[in-house]
Length: 388
Ligand code: CAA
Image (cartoon, rainbow, N blue to C red; front, side, top):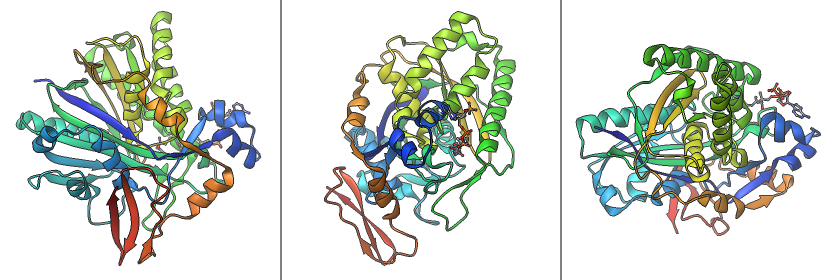
């Protein structure tokens, strides 16, 4: 039975920052951000959006009444959770109008967990072929102002519907994974911003890729020529490019050129949004689907997922017949182009205005946020969501 990604959609808020302007404000050569890190714009998350509202905005675009009837599990992958007890998934049951006969869970292992969720969904559907699982990867990638991590921020949510006979990508049973207890990136309880050993995290990401990709090749007998596109977790797009260079170092020049060309389609949206943490790898999939003109049914995509702390995984998926039927060329580029570009001072104001853990009751002005689902503030520490 083919099981995999039936539908995919994405949401990022309506605000962004130009990386060249940020570089200028931080006295950095703009080419360090634009070329060295590989980011041209960065999503700015207003206080009126959090992982729950962003997830609802993403999922709402793809779910039909029939899907809602069949979804019996919601797996919410995030490392920007808004509660130590209640899962982000349970808010979605109400906001999206899902039935009550549904299992709702939040999962955590840094940026890796949407991949874990897809595999858990795969197992669930193998046992319950008529069910569908909603997988969310939603995060607000947030480092301190004027820190080295600042240019690698971003945020948004990817929503994926996992089912049998999927329209887009059939997940293959070929994953290789590797875990090790390392301190490359973490966010202690009570901290709003991540702490990171930046250079070390970059190196661990690449070392884990070497482990899982070698084991994958040993297990399957597939070399790099078997792949039609390679997708990577993209904390910043240059990082995925470094992993791609490792993957193609012994490749035939035609294969290397083809994969390098497709990687530009994979990273196009991330380059304008920044890090998404859990959703990043799958934003790359959406970007490839909407921007490549060479994809065909049956082609094999390689996916490298990484979550600091750390977990790496490599697996593949095969494009399904008719995979592009509901994909509109460059559709999301229009959404990105319509965003409001902030000045650095405005971005810093937005950055500093988010709800804090200590806020017991605070109402947010939702009138300037055009999204359908918004976070309206807290009342007695209870989060308030509004459907416009
Ligand atoms: N023109 C062109 N390139 C330039 C340049 C210029 N004027 N100036 C610098 N560069 C290049 C550098 O040569 C370097 O390139 P290489 O990586 O190819 O060597 C690149 O720009 C970055 O320069 P630095 O290494 O000096 O940058 P930095 O010290 O400011 O740190 C960073 C960069 C480590 C990515 C930092 O932004 C950071 O810590 N980010 C957060 C952590 C992160 O994203 N880690 C990635 C792996 S962890 C993960 O995947 C989980 C997750 O999502 C966080």
